[in-house]
Image (cartoon, rainbow over all chains, first blue to last red; front, side):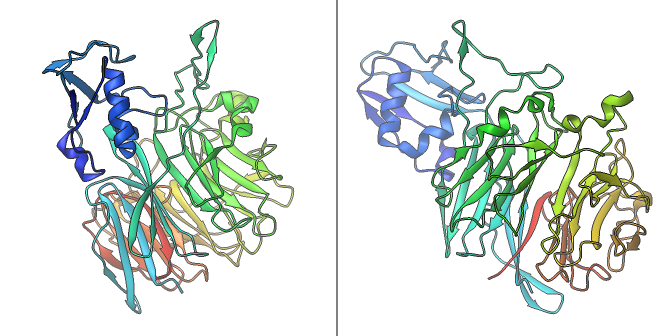
Length: 89
Length: 371
């Protein structure tokens, strides 16, 4: 199973516990996670299904290369971490 | 008489409740630390709507029924589609990219045609309509498809936006929307057909005749008199304008102490009475001479009174942004919030003001409501 986790700061706005999914790509992992947590989708992806500009996805600690299609392949026990930049004042 | 004041700020939604004459008490803030760009109470069912800008996490809309907030649907436009296999890239009047991504909830108004119906204006310039209290939104594509819409451009933001929605109390199908920068658009059939009615406004920063083009006007705010809905007022980028009996806009002659500003409000019963909060000029957006004043006309713009009792008169840099001024339904109460966190209320039509706070986060919008 692939473990998908979300940034802790997002927990303030919407419940987003880590979830386990069966997935072969990053896109698949995220979509299956969103199937369990539908309210989280719009916080990570925009209205076109694209990763929001200041969000990042790491697989086993390495940032994904394909931000647009999220097509990077996953191993069976991969850890997918959704992260975000911090900014503002 | 309004008994509640909703204040949308860069760091949350603040509610003040009236405790007595000129006395308002702050309740615990909602959405503390999150930018709240617009707020609306629907007097028909008491629901409160808030537009939030979570930055990295996107724009959200929440609704409060009773005491409980619930996230509802944020409006969205469909993608622009593809041409010859490539995604269509839409551009503004200056040829800059104009993506269809929601950036800000910039206006929210009730649509009296149906219970629970709402209008929502956004940056990037899309108008939406809901018939189910924001559970779903319909994009008003007919406005987007207007030829003149392609000339719009952003004023202070990367893309254009709809900041004012005026629904005619006589006929809810007649709606005016104010666009920065893109003029004032009118529909008479609830959003089916549109025409730009900003004729007479003039953008003096645009050279030659082009400055009269309705499609490029920057009416910072447009308001409508409830009792005389043909009377519209606008604090435009280049002056204060009002509509005449022919529907054309004319700049008012009075200029005290400047013609620049963002906010305006019109008395709900008296079309000749309106308020403005002047700033020095476009390139210096602070009060004139460091004194915060409100101006009021009671004669349709022939003269402007300068009102300042209770407002700070020295070393003041507060700017009142386009949604930072509101008037109650009886026309007696006014509320004003600034980008440096000042909040004032008047209960005598602007003659005297009381400071409710000098330390709020930057204020985006103030709106009277009822508890």
